[in-house]
Image 1 (cartoon, rainbow, N blue to C red):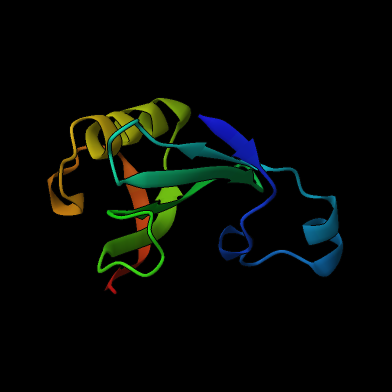
Image 2: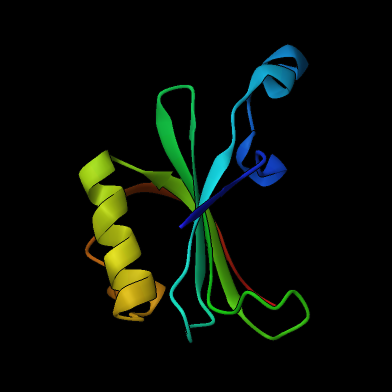
Length: 103
């Protein structure tokens, strides 16, 4: 787990002033695993971006949305990164999914 600057893709629906004042994001990855999750708290929501391959030029599936709770975010990270389940197989409480794309 590492922390980074805010991921712009997770800053939907906020004002420019909020964007400037916003904190960082947390990146969850596992050694030897190509999957990656970025989590960020924005306006009392835990927003995520997840991808099956962290190489930006690789063919992968990505998803962007909101996890319902902190416990749900922990479960999401465990299922998606540690167990390498497909997005459709997750039991984590994702309250909405904005897109699921193949690159």
